[in-house]
Image 1: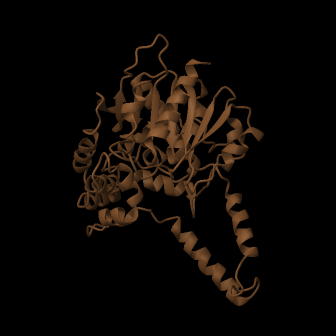
Image 2: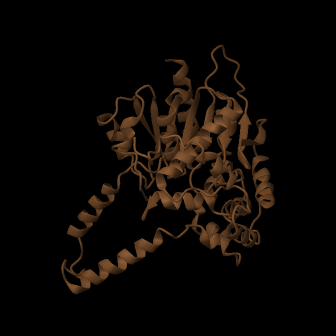
Length: 383
């Protein structure tokens, strides 16, 4: 293992990391946070989140679980309604980038019929604390892994099913590799961070061979100019935070979301009105962008991961862990890395494709998604 290995324990650095959750941890953050408060504040986010959670029929408890100095994780807990002789392990739901636990409101009532359900806001997102993450990608992964473990210890979980969507799926995979004895099953929904950067290069080479006649030939001045401009754009894009437009104010965040994410609005329209969902997005991303900064340091424009899981890192997965992948059949995210996993690891791997679904499969086709998850939960008791 090398010094920055994501699976290494961060040791005493984690406590110092938790201390940075304070809004006055440095003068720059204090000033920036005060400006962001003009756009959004934690009280507004709490109000909108509670407005969404009122749509849930099942009883639940919610608390800010203390995992370290000045650091808490927003947690929902639904007790299993089924009284069976062999209860299923609890299931923990991790959301993706730029959203929060409220995105699973269409799934809680059904899944908690079969298992205890926990849903959390990842550090840096939602109503959890927003510490200053490391600037080094592998240390960011370490910090996330250890925060999840500290949360598990704080709530008293033993073996559990871990379900992660997108960025949450990436972190779930690293956690399972670090703490395999805690995992009853790993369910990865459209996980980000699996394809290697070489996949992008392969696509680029294919596009190069299919370029139109007007595109400059390799070696010409015009070609070099195009490459230079593209390189400058991608170089500075890595410093660009995707939801900066929300925090600029001027009331543009919510209208832009409602204009360009009509797919999500339509997916939730049977439970939440568009105005409430727009407010949720605004207040999720209108505050100090701790998690957004961390994600930006983990990714390479456009959409690829600096520390991809496939094909090398995933080889460290303990063979005892059963993995299930869930993809939408209309998604932009390719299931190919999951299909190729059996060539690299000895784990039991299965793939489920959910019809009429895009990236947010849990909301696009809720009934089918819930059915797949429940089947996966039941399969544990049958083994």
